[in-house]
Length: 169
Image (cartoon, rainbow, N blue to C red; front, side):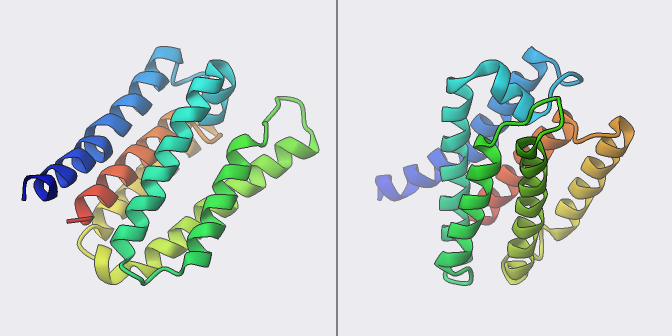
């Protein structure tokens, strides 16, 4: 009985506290105006990529648990591959095919993830207003900076982690 109770507490700690704390502290330590998430990965290096992979594993694990069979394995594999490629494909300041592919795959990942969220509407319907507000705030932050800002990315990832964690009762 204790093991069953401890597991959700650990997941709540990871999804609602650790991931947002790690993302926000990293962003504010290195400068939220200067970098977006990819920029932070390039500055910090290997440890940041390692933590990004752990966050991705938690995110996919949580989606599998939350979807309870609604999402197909192929959909989750596709999302994972899209995120991994856009994560490890370098973005360089000078225009290159890699930079363009990074941007394209990042947008495709974002749109595809929102499609999967739409598929989970019956489960997430109570969180859709919060998620919609989150999308609007992040969109505003990106428009304000005229780029995909680090603050918008970290805010989105943190609240997505919190929503998915809380929805996984």
